[in-house]
Structure formats: structure tokens, C-alpha cells
Image (cartoon, rainbow, N blue to C red; front, side, top):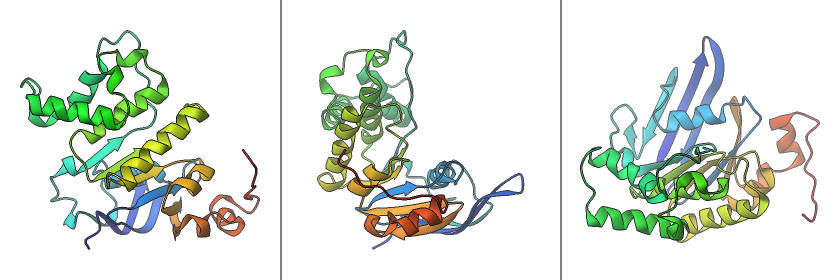
Length: 247
């Protein structure tokens, strides 16, 4: 089966300074891939490569089997950025934020059809935010706003959803609810997920594969193999240790 994302020998330099070196990685249909690594290790840069927002200095990138420079079916990918805090004075409703993804494809000034509005409602129901559809986005909690952004990413029917540190600033209870939603999307809805996170314990419980990144690909495989003292030492330095506790 053709991988949804395929990188081979990817290298990225910023002003001659290497940020990513010789990255080879595949994302298969149905994966829930967690990308972990230290700050400055190149995690967000890797996502930008996958999303076509950054051209690598060298190497090959393919999306759904197509070279990325020829790929144009961007609705097949959804993206949830790092925490976005909406100003409480912004008058946009939750439903309006979600439908902006459809407006981007349909044309900014075209009225959305009844079917498109139903798709927005379906995405909000899936994200557990349909009760808030008429409320202002800026009046929601950070965790609720992130769910709205997931609904916005889902409304175009993507086959792969890419999330960059989506639970930053979210309290533990909302975080657990958020990851339960991701589990549902992956296991029940069949959405392939790529998640950048600093939360190693959450990654260990949630994902099916882990990519450990520190400028180079340190490890790519099952979470049980990655999250060992030896694996963490290779990723974060020799002082890193895995500590088990009840909380």
C-alpha cells in the first residue's frame, strides 16, 4: 500500500546551519504517529515539510505517492497548529470558524450550501462541540478552542490529520478528553494522525508508532521500544531517565 507521507534523505538548512539531516520516514494509512524530541530538534520543521510549507534543501518528499511539488489535493490533509488563543472580542462564532475551511475551497464570497453546513455540523459533533456552535470562539476555554480547530481541520474530510503540540496550556482533564477524541478519530473514523508532543507519557499510551527526532531520526518504531532509558538518553542526553509513577 502506498504511504500517505514519504520522506527520503530529507535535509533542511537555515542559513547553512543544519536543522534536519538525512530524514527518512514513512506514514502509513491508519498510523497514529507521535513525534518527540528536544526543543530545537526539528519537529515543527518536519511538519512544515509534510505540509508543503517548507522546501527541503535536499531529499525527496511524496504525499499519497505523488512528488510534493506536483501534489495539489491539499484537502486530503488537515492541520491543527500549536495553541491559538482567540481574542474574546472577536465576533466569530464556532460554526463560522469551522466553515472558513470550506469557504477557502469554495471561494470566500460564495454562500455555503446546505450540504456544506451539514458537513460543518457533523465535524462539530465528532469533535464534541456542536452544543457551542452559535457561541463566540473567544469565549471558549483553550481546550474547547482546540476541539473547534480539530473540527475545522476535519470538515474537508482529510485522510491524515497533522497536529503540532495541540494540548499546550490545556489542563490535565481537558487533555485526557482531547486524546480520547484523537483515539476515536484514529481507531473508529480511520483518520491517520501525526502528532508532535512533549508529553512522553501521553505519547506512550496514545500512539501506535513513535519517531524520535533530534535533527536526525534517532528512532522510528513502537513506543515501548522507544521510551526506554537507553532510547531517551540517545534523544535527550545521558542524564534522561524514564520514571514510572501512579499519576
